Length: 199
Image (cartoon, rainbow, N blue to C red):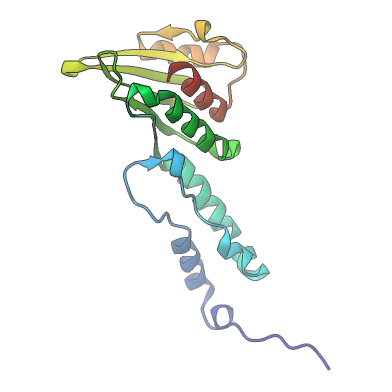
């Protein structure tokens, strides 16, 4: 007796165009917030791809595009805020959350700001903003009364903190990111260094 497969209305009755729209909707982010906490990031789920081979074949390209778009278009933040007495604990939590993320996903990040507020040193906070995945960062120190200082850094692999090349002009960072003759540091490693050294 020949094996029979049960009919599946999703594939048998819905046209391909409608199925593709369903796939796109299922991979959309659940949150539409302006900022996404990198420590609690929730990228598109692969669950639908794992239901059957036909769903995988039809939806895998849509999933890959949605997954990459999630990482490249989201405005990520990472907060290490809190009293100075919790600085070490906040750093540990951020590094553990970062360790759980895949480096290849983080390589697609375009927008990231690491925030540290409520310091007991007269500063209101410090923000580190990723300007370029090749290693360009903007550091902003916020002070009581609304004043701030900005400094720009270029991070490269194997280069100690003392040689990160700080600049006061953003254009210099762009030039050095293009002309500093070493390869770029992976984004995951950059974030780790920023947290360890500056926070």
